[in-house]
Image (cartoon, rainbow, N blue to C red; front, side):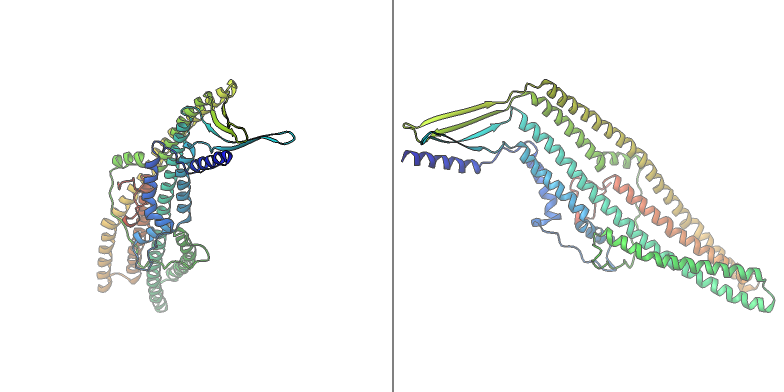
Length: 449
């Protein structure tokens, strides 16, 4: 009966142990709240969010939202982050208790001694491991943030390149129509002896070039659509999205100093490297803890003895390998210096890259203003003047056509420069952790510049 009671108590103690919960580490609850806030929008109830319907008249915001919610690279970064949140709990938890059993057997079973054993890492070790895991969790979040921003950038790039293609085709067809009219007039004038053959041949050569340009542009539509489809996270076997019927542009105008300050404060790559420095700092503290012994405590009970005999167990590791401990500490310090150096190099690279991208953004903005505000109005006025002269019979048709072609060429330059301007702006947004559309606000800790 006594044996049954002892075994029952032992079984109950094991069941209690299996239901225990550890003490959350500093920052663990905050990490879970942050993750849950993002997961509630990105994967509500651990299910994919409802994707917006894509139509030809959908806004750029809808296309970006679709890409953010559907892109597998974003999903991979999200679940890496999820795993790192769980790893904080794993790192700060005690090892599993061990169920032990010992018996002395001669001719018969003389003793039956079940028991359990619990290992206890040295003081401060669990907290040090938790700090390492918390810093690693931050790097995974910033990797997720980078994936979100990169996806938005890729989508915008594919979107604007599609828009550029459609406008290039439109202006090339207008050029083709004007050159065909000019060719017809020159044919008639050549038959009447009022136009030279070299001029006619020049126009025909330009026509052949324009037809070739149109064929190349038409042929480029398929890879651009595939790129747009990939940016939306659609697999090859899935049907492609409807091409946008219109293309949105922006009119932002940023201050360079303010934007650069914002970039250094919010760039996810820099933030991830800062978190790596924190990992190495926590790693140094953990390395120093290797000099602290670990402990184990347990209890066994001889259920055959009367009265019952209990055997307490205790153990302690002996950190005697001083060269090993010294190497662990030296390794941790070297890792910290390497991480700090990488952070410094990344800050230098960011400053250079920001200056280049901001120059491209400003340059395309100036060029766009020049073409739209001055060159096109001047070209319009030139066409009107030449048209009046043509109607009065003082200017021939070829001069009028050349002026109209020059105007079309300026309009084509406008769309090309505007596309470069939008892509430069998207690149700046990538550097400064620009915020995705309001209805897909996955980056909860960023601010619109």
